[in-house]
Image 1 (cartoon, rainbow, N blue to C red):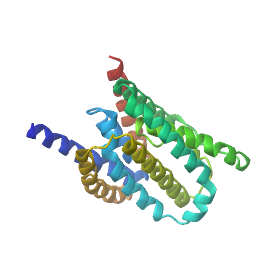
Image 2: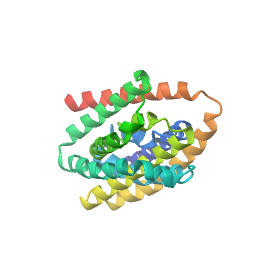
Image 3: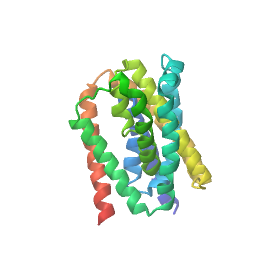
Length: 249
């Protein structure tokens, strides 16, 4: 029993270290990669509860170090509000449905995200459409993140399509991921899905996640981000397919 617990702790630590490296290189991917790996060895609900604290810490840091928080909130507040509402609704699926279906949904989200990253062309949102689209995108993002623990679809492609500067985009991603994390944590807490052991492991996971981010930031200077992202997307796609097939069989 102790050996099994030690092995699980090691897997969790390595997962968040590697996910931290990915976030350090690309600015995102910690919750996505963590859910992809942990979702293959435990229930999606357990995996989500483990990623809450390291995800919040790393994303909040990304948010507060950006150039103009107030301007970003003024522009994206409708989207953020919709993310909260969608996450609360989506988390019901995570806590009240068969894990087979949530695992399948997670796999499908990973495959879609990987396919978009590999094949999708850059999108562009006209300024006149932004106010109408933002709450729709926020609601969809919240519903998917609430049900699967993956915060990136369709928020990331949408934010990339707004024509933000590099620094503003990184901060906008941090804002979206932070709001998603807080909303998901609140929903799971109200639903009684958190357990003391998971909270402790989640807090301890901050250490390998931050170490990984430090390594990833250094790695970014020595490899091409485009090459790294391509292989990262392929890896996520393979994991997503594995989750889908395992849920069906």
